[in-house]
Image (cartoon, rainbow, N blue to C red; front, side):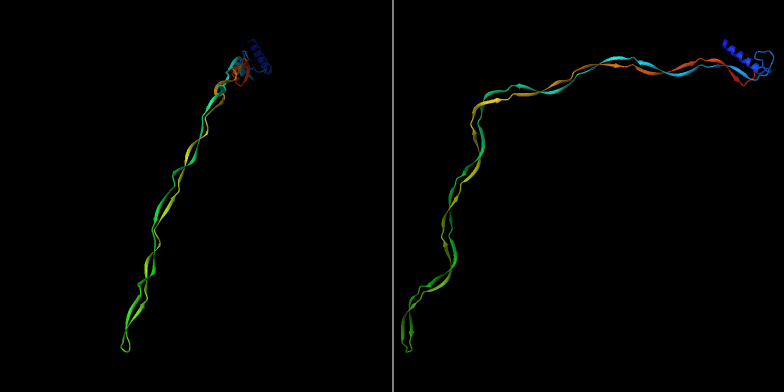
Amino acid sequence: MLRTSLVALGVCGGLMAKAPAAIAFDHGCGGREPARAVECYEKVRRPDVYAIEERPVVVERARREQVFVPAVVEPRPYRVEVAPARVYAGHVPAVYATVLKSRLVEPARTTYVTEPAVVERRQVHVMTHAGGVRWERSVGHDGRERLCKVEVAPQYRSVARDVVVAPTRRVAVHTPAVYRAVPVSVEMSPAHTRLLRQLPAYVVETRPTVLRPAEVHIVDHPPVVALERQRVRVQSGSTAWQRTDDRRW
């Protein structure tokens, strides 16, 4: 307040020095006689000055965490022996095979058939008169009769007749035997006993296998910092003299 009063007094003094014939205010800047003001100043209040300021703020403090990583287990097949190898006397059965063999189905036989005679139609000469002698009577020129014994030749003629070219005969017909292929079981190897070796027996089992053991990791988490915007007063308000055109008081 003291500083403000001194500034006001200084301003009034300056104005009075510059204008001796006129006073800065109508009342002569505190005087009693009226005067005409040349310049006027008004006391004003200057507000506080604020600014937006960003500052880091810790949202979450730094911390240390233990992270458990489980083991990686995967089923894997394993070959397991369930019976060892051994040697034992074993019975080997006979070995049979099926082969085709020819079997008599029907034996050979002989039958007889009768073939008829072979007859052909041919022209043959047939004697129609056997011939011989005969008496012929004749009369001569003198009227005398005479009997003569005359020889007569045999007479023939052509006649169509059936002629047996081949007589009836009995013919033997031979029928061969009939054979057929029949499957027959044939022993290829007789039954016997021999030493046999039995291989070991195995089975495949699925077992869990640890590919990677469980682990514990220490993880350090840094602090989480955020920027906070805050309105901050950078200059406090004050009073000052400000020139004004209003010269009325």
